[in-house]
Image (cartoon, rainbow, N blue to C red; front, side, top):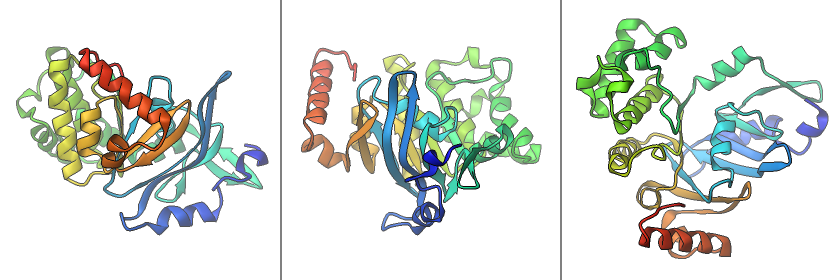
Length: 288
């Protein structure tokens, strides 16, 4: 990594101090500073900065192509950022200091950092040849080194939490989409991560199955889990979020409590987005 990448970014001690300093909301768990990511000529993230505090639920909204999913994928290091920096509990993600610049971590080191984050994808990503129980147990045992008996007990408790205690011996193909996504949430919770990342967790579900997944997510919020949720479910954002982030064209346009953003948006772009969403809901097509 060149010096130009580290210049003007919080790759030094200042970022770690900022990430650990905390606030009235509790310590900062996740910190993004001037994060940039491009796919060819498309600037997916354009100098995105965001802090997420312990126990906070941050819901990211915006039109398709605004960079929402790219943001959480970069945090989980499924995509490598082009500039800026991301810190988890003050630790720089994906890179280490090398001379006057930064050097990418190895895949093994990145995997180690990723263990402290739980990710829930749009399309479940369950192992089809594993039972529900084994899908949840596999990573804690083989990646995190948790004794199998402890991992199994934890998995059964999590299945009970998401309302699937009677489905442990089934395979993903035997479950509905909503049930599969609840298994995916249990799997993300199994290693007891510092933060949970959700990438449009209900977008692949039939409308009648959405509420059962959102209900589990509401329960997690009530338990004080630190969460970043990318979603088009505006009712969920208004009800559950501590803070909403509106993105467009790879940038954060507006951020604040949902009561403020939904009732009195400051930016014309957010007002237009919410107006389109309301119009689509009136027509029965939530395309936001």
